[in-house]
Length: 583
Ligand code: ATP
Ligand code: MG
Image (cartoon, rainbow, N blue to C red; front, side, top):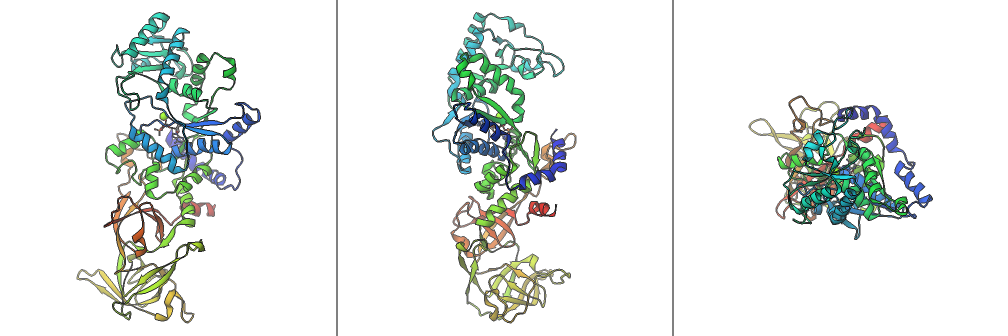
């Protein structure tokens, strides 16, 4: 399935790009629905959405899209958005996840005010409603385990088998359900099921499980409960309790919608309430190439040590992107520009990076840093002297001002910027050649020094004092402009160069007998020692800058007062912009 959709997006990409680049977008289908409902005063003109994460992992970029949509619709139409933890499975859930989810939503720039809810807050009410359904004769206790229930559900083309326990009396069901709640039965010995239709073409309507027994401590309700409602029995009812007007979720829940409605039909008796009750709308989930987004797989990457935690900068998690140097503005812009679709698609990760570059280009300070240093000695520069040269902080924005960068006799430039025997099109430094050092001087290479093995260890240059500021003194031209740092002033830093976590566009495409892990990119993290201009000394974790000619970088929280750790966020090469300009 996933492979097909990847193939499709490659085919449909030009269209997609056109959509994304459109200056003014028409309303998406959710906005159309909301505007129509507002016009018809459907919910008395009220809009209330919710973001319903299950606290069983950290949020990822797909969730960010859902957050931007739910909070965004509320903002746009003068409504509110609730945060609701869908905490119905104590075995997989944890407070660590609750805390990280709240931090991530706030960081993205959204706030739920005092509307922080938990499905577990509604356990009593849900239990009462389950009893109501038993009394109405539409729910029964089945002595099978959840696994046995799914084994007898049939197939999409064959009807399921009715359970022998389906005919239990209301009294017996009420009694057994209470005993389930009181802890009289071990895990897996009974479930509560809705009595719907074992021959329904929709598998979700074949007497779905409403409650299962789990003798497990819940992070909020402790040991009060040993039966827990299933997602389907909790979600719609939670929406209903909170008065959600538009329950937005991803496409895979479309087939659950009849059940969502069935439960509400059976618990709501008042036609008055029924008229304005909540409705579920489905949109296509966000998929990105070169990554996986299922929390189960992300958890596996973390647990098995393929990455260094949920916030590893290679992860598609919000915390990973934050640590990588992404800004909330760029993520919101991305979510907005990919839009809301009704059909599955796969978005190019280059486009996510493009949105980030656009944002950082406007806001990030330019500084100079050298990642693969080559020593340059300026022969005619006085020993022990320092020159302070003025450098522009951001050529896109004058208000960001200037700073001074020290220049001295010994400098570092990038190894790649020098060639002893350059090909024709190489315009950087070479023996006898003159280039400009950004904001500093013209220098000319006089001599190449090598070590015993024949490797270049340093180069000797002269500088032209009349070219101060990097300006030509007499109109003579140089073809190359290089970044550099003064060796004596530079700050040493550990620089982590990140690349894609997977080598394949579709990590789910693997050979028989292998799994998605075989597509991990063995070179997704390389570490090097860089030399950065001294203005970086005051930088704090999270600070972002462009290293001229190299990319965008940010300070990692692993930094200490003695050791600066820098992450490369993205290089400057914008494959997305390049591709779209060409087409
Ligand atoms: P996963 O499938 O990645 O494990 P999930 O759907 O189980 O995620 P939830 O915590 O249940 O994760 O999701 C909370 C909300 O975020 C749901 O409304 C869900 O539909 C939405 N959501 C999850 N993944 C995506 C995605 N890739 N794109 C858009 N919305 C998403
Ligand atoms: Mg889920």
